Length: 207
Image (cartoon, rainbow, N blue to C red; front, side):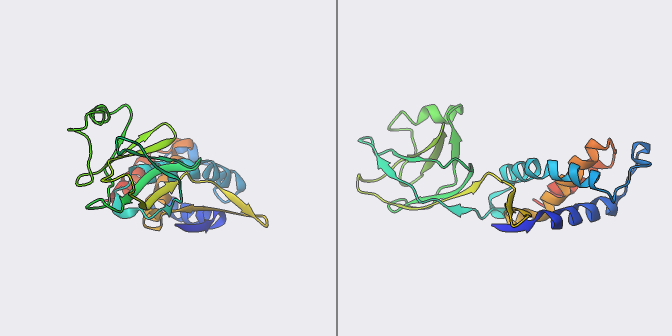
């Protein structure tokens, strides 16, 4: 994960917005060098990071490692308590699995209901990770003595303050998409039609 000062994000977003320019008359008379614009940008940072990191292809994500209690039930389904800052799974590996899994389903998915069928659910050969409320269920272990090799996840973004300097962390390969998305959200607030171009640019950076 990359940590960037909020002041650096202001600068990058301003440059991104200026690169495309402003199209609408609503922006006339708005001093884009004052703190009012910075406040709009500040209010959109977390929304943008969450959106990009939830939707980015896995190849753009790195994440952090979770150290967690690993409980294996009699049915060989393992359960892991998720941290409060959990946002998205990147990769999970149990020692007996043939491969790491990033096949993630949720409790409202049709695929989740198949996991109750021992013959249809994920196995150590084709593992599946299910996010259920505040836990992750791993389908399935090979033995009751299996161990968790890795659980990489994306944490929810938060702006932190250290010695009066605010900063935020995100996946470094998502940086250009995040900056463009913040620019688009900011221009939406200003009712500028060029916001849509920034959203398109953000998508292109994640191809």
